[in-house]
Amino acid sequence: MARQRKALSLISGGLDSMLATRVIMDQGIHVEGVNFFTGFCVEGHTHAIRKKDKAKPKRNNALWVAETLGIKLHIVDVIDEYKDVVINPKHGYGSNLNPCLDCKCFMVRKAHEWIQEHDFDFIITGEVIGQRPMSQRRDTMPVIQRESGAEDRLLRPLCAKNLPETLPEREGWLQRENLFDFSGRGRKPQIALARSLGIEDYAQPAGGCCFLTDEAYSVKLDDLWRSRGTRDYELDDIMLLKVGRHLRPRPHFKLIVGREEGENNFLEGYRKQFTHLRTLSHPGPLVLVDGEIDADDLHLTARIAARYSKGRDAASVEVEIVPQGGEPQRLLVPPLAGDDMPDNWLL
Ligand code: SF4
Image (tube, rainbow, N blue to C red):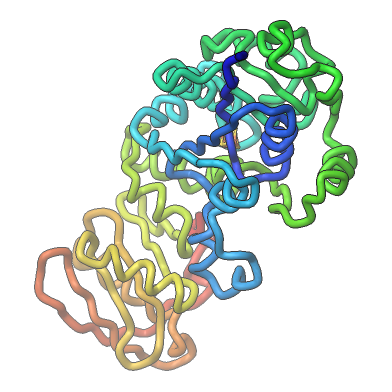
């Protein structure tokens, strides 16, 4: 009897990888999914923090896709290894700090290592030629195959007919005629295919699958690197960049100001690692201070905290300051006026 062939599918949580997986499952291949956790992923839990995002489903889309398709999903933590991809991308960045081509090569390389360890036969992705300007182009498709080491064990079911035959097609493990020839940025073929497969619910495609494609996020990451004089980060750093208003009033310190209750609650978890402030006389945000500050800076910081409180129009606001590892102190300060707050403080 012919051996049951096995494929590992890179599941982002979006429609393309969902369709690619389903198309291969329908050809009798055993498929399992993998999702790499880089720390930059746009996760359901970040939607859960803010009230304005309350309408979005609070789910991890990769897990949801796997459950919907009835396949096993392996979530692999690559936080440390991924740093080199973000910090030193050989192929550079896209329009923001998104190193998409290096990222794809990295993820397919990790998937290739995985299939070798687990005796799987090939890898599938939801890539479509021309779908993304940086990583999904005709000329980048072979780059990913080559640099990942996966070579012709990498199959893109949605655009396979526009590409040279891969091992699973040549070996007859599946039928090339049942694969697709999608290309370009349009979504109509994917939506039509989803409908024909009875798939009605799927995550709406956004700008990308991670925060690195987001301009505001990239500005904050770049600021973090500049202010520290080194292009490095820890997981907490990149999680905090997703939350709050970030202001840099002086080169040597930054403030993270909760914008609403959900963010204040999230920032509470980081209180002990930072000097922090909150307003006592009026409701206001939790403010974390990232950097070393002196007495003058403290006064300025208290005035900024007061400005973002309900007491912004009051003559004075009482602010509690808790230095990291120190005793709390209280200051009565006038809120900072808008004219005294240059636009370039806000990252
Ligand atoms: S959007 Fe993010 S996760 Fe997706 S390929 Fe680009 S860098 Fe990688």
